[in-house]
Length: 230
View 1 (cartoon, rainbow, N blue to C red):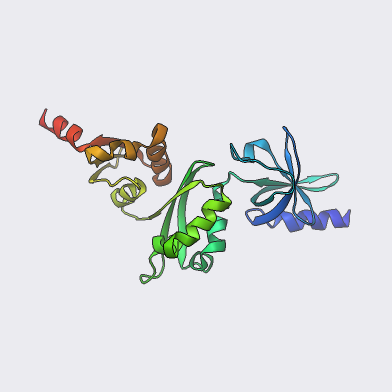
View 2: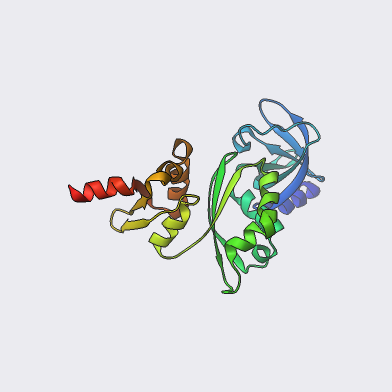
């Protein structure tokens, strides 16, 4: 009993941590992952579509929840939580781990794409460059751990127009018009960047909106000009 309580406390205090485990068992209902001292559950809703959790596979996961059960703590782990991306960058980027660079916001569609906004507490440290790493080495480590999920790293800004503009990456916005009352942002992009700005099935603009907290409308320059001339 005491041992079970101690185990529960240990893992309860680690909610939000990164853990590495080995896949033990995998079926339709759940995947069991051995964390060394305890077996954790990776439920279907915490699994990334398209990821294969074969027996013996080594996985980095995020501790999402810990519940009491008769057999000791029930540890729920996740591969879809945005916090997993954050913890992986802490692992790869010393400046993030040391708190010089702050990960301000993350918007994620697991298995597809993540947008991450970063800021630096030291004016001499470029937050985006540090997270990308020399020749992309740091971001590449995170991408490979996440099975080639695409990651856009961009500079956070307290100026909404600037933040929305950055969030549209890889598209280059020409102009952002903010409507404060409606919390909408109108983004004007070059004609040849319109589909890039919207993204595959609207993914780029959807993630940018989630990241910034603004509703985003996109128009091409010619569209915008034509409407102004009306």
